[in-house]
Image (cartoon, rainbow, N blue to C red; front, side):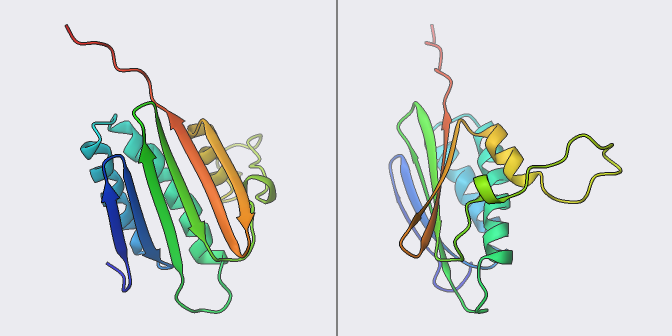
Length: 154
């Protein structure tokens, strides 16, 4: 766990504070898994959200900070039983991944494609809602996935 990292949790909600270190992705993945289990959500959601977090947070850590200093990345997860929602907030350079990231070129053979470029594409394809906004000096990415209704059990 990184220095200064913390968690706040309540039923249907958790907030994590990560430091800008890729090693934090492992802790985040474990917390997402625990959140899914604690809220009795479909296990596949953990993979979906962790895939998105991996892409978004890796980009933030790798390209969002020019000063080399320690920064916090806030991740909030909520569920109301019909939707799972995530917010990723950081104080990195302004960057809208949904408008500024180049679209992947899917026309070439897989062996001919340039490495990278699929991450934001996958975020858009796996989420029902993906949005970005700049709040002052902070980036905020909001992701949401609608949950399939659970059939009544006999």
